[in-house]
Length: 482
Ligand SMILES: Cc1cc2nc3c(=O)[nH]c(=O)nc-3n(C[C@H](O)[C@H](O)[C@H](O)COP(=O)(O)OP(=O)(O)OC[C@H]3O[C@@H](n4cnc5c(N)ncnc54)[C@H](O)[C@@H]3O)c2cc1C
Image 1 (cartoon, helix red, strand yellow):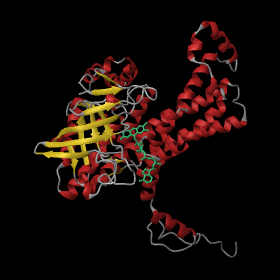
Image 2 (tube, protein in one colour; image 1 turned 45 degrees about the vertical axis):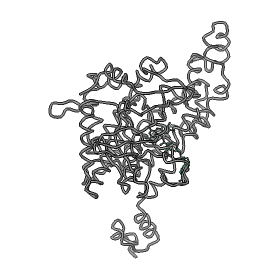
Image 3 (spheres, helix red, strand yellow; image 1 turned 120 degrees about the vertical axis):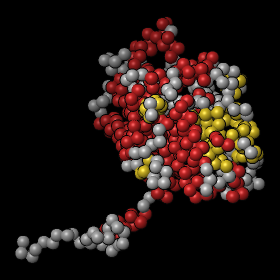
Image 4 (tube, helix red, strand yellow; image 1 turned 90 degrees about the horizontal axis):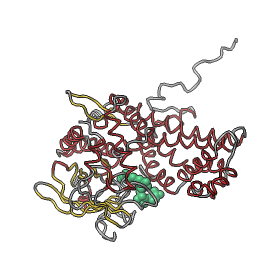
């Protein structure tokens, strides 16, 4: 089924426990500061029902229509289509409430199959049962991966940790399911979703096998509490802490419960999909950042200046390289013979995420340079709204006469948001910190090939298949007589 926006909103009234700025919100749909976010997420369902988007957003199988997001990705084209949907949603100021959860579902599907094959467990059937349920009910789902961790260099179960619950863990096992306790941090849009796909954030040892845990948890389950992001930092609940206090998870919603050998694979399988999602939505944002720089240059009358053009060219490159890497990662997908799942090229998707995260502050620096100091010192929008003083702002904060002062002020305000601490931290840490990409790139790099390339350039023979048959001298020799 495809839910309507009205159904999406109705389903948010399910008794979920949410605290915002110290107070409990009984019904998030009646909380005015959340309205804008709810409209954004509900708009994904509106577009999914719209005749102009239906064929892109949905698929029909055996006469049943369901969201393309819940289809098993089977090719690079499937991954690219998901990218098109995400970017269409972004450009439509819509979507987000199931952005991360799909990566969680595909990651868990991948890892559960591998685990079943190696250990004789039966988790893949649970994952596919959950996927089927998603196809039939069209929920929003969120990946809840990041744990609070405590002392980063210690394992979860290490007695030197302040307590045992820095990583989500199984505290009790019953015949019909498990009980879990702990916390997940920074879980984007999760207050506006229906189901949390909980995954481990790292490897765990045999002694820490109760932390090797993956499962799906409805947000209104008894014992689940959301502590929303400070409203000064983020809107619509943001990226909350989620407390799990002895939450029951029935067997059919459990995707891993103690198989510590596969904990790392659960985490990395999710990341494999999620880094591509990051590069996908980020491109739309970075297009906006490059455009903002050009608009500010135009408002300041400086588009002719070489030094400004140099920065603009860099910003255009910054956005387009992110997209090129994302597209390459999707279209150069590998189809895993064991699972049948298509996975993006992990090297390209990690390059994409690293590229935009590593350079985000540089990009903002350029836009700030182009804008001038007024972005940091301008009067408030409330001054603009006061007719007694608006005339001064209009007169003195105008730039090139071709453009209204108000446009320049809006652009300056947008720069304040783009350059905010939140946006900088989001770029670096969301979808995994820079070290996570470096580690993956180091592990995934084809060092044998790189070494063979180096040897070949030094005219040294090598057994590597790419170079073995390649000549060590230019294949054409100049005849003595020529
Ligand atoms: C806006 C935002 C949205 C997010 N959304 C989600 C979401 O929807 N779902 C989700 O699951 N997570 C989400 N995250 C979490 C994100 O994935 C993490 O913030 C990220 O993985 C970094 O983890 P951390 O914050 O615990 O920082 P840390 O892991 O503490 O990293 C801080 C620094 O310490 C380094 N470091 C950490 N451990 C070690 C070690 N053992 N040895 C050496 N160096 C180390 C890191 O490389 C980094 O430089 C989000 C984060 C943000 C900021």
